Each structure stands twice: as structure tokens, then as C-alpha cells.
Image (cartoon, rainbow, N blue to C red; front, side, top):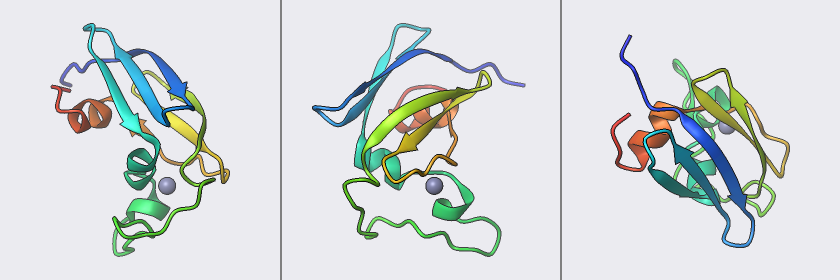
Length: 105
Ligand SMILES: [Zn+2]
């Protein structure tokens, strides 16, 4: 299996509505709450198999849905955000977060 970079820390900036992630190679990346919620990779939002998923670029989102309450680490490979509406099933892998920010996984 290919080695990938891991996050060493993360910080929720509620004022700027961004999640900051620090990486073991010294890089730091930021993700806007709404951008992050729209990218939710869970089966309900992103779809799975023949199911299309409920989230698209045009899906209206409430303040609760785009408010990041907390972030839990998942194993040693990703992060699971808890959103203001209680949604927490999306696991954002480190690989996905790095790639999204234009960095090598
Ligand atoms: Zn989701």
C-alpha cells in the first residue's frame, strides 16, 4: 500500500468558518465549511451504487448543515466532522483532503 501523509492536528475556526488541517510534512490547508459539507463522501450525500446521492453543487444548505461543530479522527487515515444538523457519517480521508487542497496525498 502506498504511504500517504497524515494530519497532525486540526482546528475549527468558527469566525472564518474554515477547518484548518496541519500535516506531518509541515503543510497546512484550509477548507471552507460549506465547501467541505458539499464534498461529504458518505453514501447518503455522495451516493453509492445506483443511488445518486442527495448533495449537489446546487443543493440548498442551511446554516446548521454548514456549521462544523467538531471533528473526530477516524483510525489513522481520516477525519469525521460533526455538523450542526447532527450529520456525522462522512469520513474525509487524509488522501482526499490533501488532494482537494492540491497537495500530493
Ligand atoms: Zn454526508
